[in-house]
Image 1 (cartoon, helix red, strand yellow):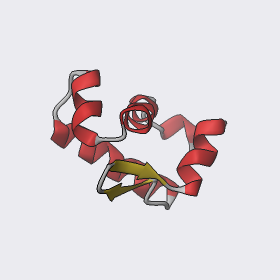
Image 2 (image 1 turned 135 degrees about the vertical axis):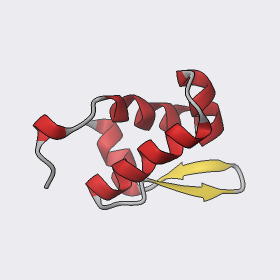
Image 3 (image 1 turned 60 degrees about the vertical axis):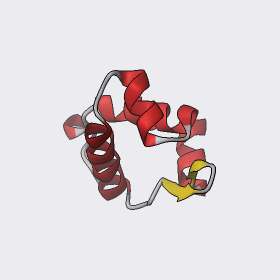
Length: 73
C-alpha cells in the first residue's frame, strides 16, 4: 500500500478530470496539461492502485468498478 504522505495530490485532479471528461485529451485540455502528462499521471495511478481505472472504448475512457468506487469516496 502507498504511504499517503508520498502521494502527489495532483493525481486526484487528473483522476477526476478523466472521470468527468471520459478521455485523456479532453482531461488534458481541461487541466491545461499535455496529453502525455495526463497519460503519465494515469500510469502512476494505475501502478499505485493496482487497477486499470479506465478502459479505452469506442466512446471514450470507461471507469472500472474500482474507479467508480474511488469516485464515491
